[in-house]
Length: 418
Ligand code: ATP
Ligand code: MG
Image (cartoon, rainbow, N blue to C red):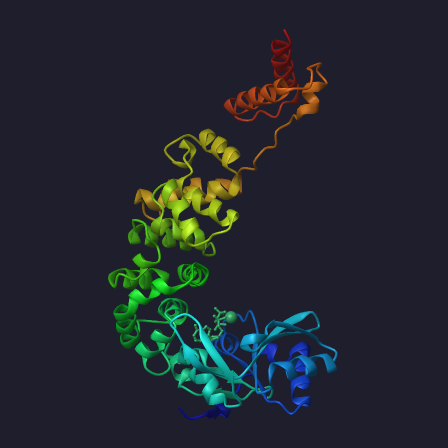
């Protein structure tokens, strides 16, 4: 591997000149250290994709990074100091500053690292050529593994021997597919694909948390459909989503999101791929250690309500939307649409899916106090009356005539008192 500073492809992304980043660069170089932006930020800037986090690699040791940042009046937090990472805060923006590293020991899921001052060694332990690009403060781009060329051709290739790199960390199998789905074009790299297929058993070593993060990014990626199909062919997706899989339903769901012009919903995509009933949702929520909120979103796949189906009248759909809430209703309709096999151009499903845009969920006009004001004594009866009112109100399709509403509530209260 040779270092090439590609002066002709200098980077001039706006964020490179942001004052906050300049302060971090200045702090590190005040100590004589070298520092460069690395990884995703450089990769994405080179292809005009949005840049989220800015990670910085430096020759300074972690303790020196702490001191240099503090000397420059910046915040410095030892967020991952054992593996070399200090979070430096300038103008309220956080930067992960990591000392250059080399692996000394790997066991398929974690690495023991030692610090180094060699950029080449630091690049060699990264996973893909497109992820080993560095950029210094002056905009010079350093490419150690032909990453720029691969990026231009949208190729995701392992640095070094694919099988050896996977044996060091089996998460790289999922990362290979994830980055291919995010940045790749055309066929998957055949060497990477063959290595992933050959070594897939090793993935059972991985923690649920690491798998979850990669899986959700993969499913939300622009090219997820083709990549999931390739993973399915190799028996790889089955090792991560261990329910009955429906890759065609997944493809239809992605097509529906696309026609509706909606951003990818990773959990709904997961549901489209592998949730067939409530048990599947509960199983996957546990397997992937989803939060309660995430688990709920996954379960909306199995929300059952006749109003989800466009064959029912609009009033039935409105009741469904009122009962389920906008989020669950929207997800449930899209998933049922994908399940139905109807094309993404179907006007009836489309209209049902977009009900949330044209109908505002009404709010219950009464609360407990309104019932008490009618002379009902506090107690379980109050709730019963409200429920009875809500049932009537829904069955009449949410009339907003206040007089009529009061009349019904009064009658219900009178019945309950006598
Ligand atoms: P994203 O935009 O998705 O965050 P990223 O490139 O920043 O993309 P991260 O997962 O945040 O991806 O990792 C940051 C960098 O660290 C990668 O670009 C890569 O160089 C390196 N890296 C991360 N995980 C691994 C791994 N398991 N093996 C080798 N290198 C890795
Ligand atoms: Mg990142």
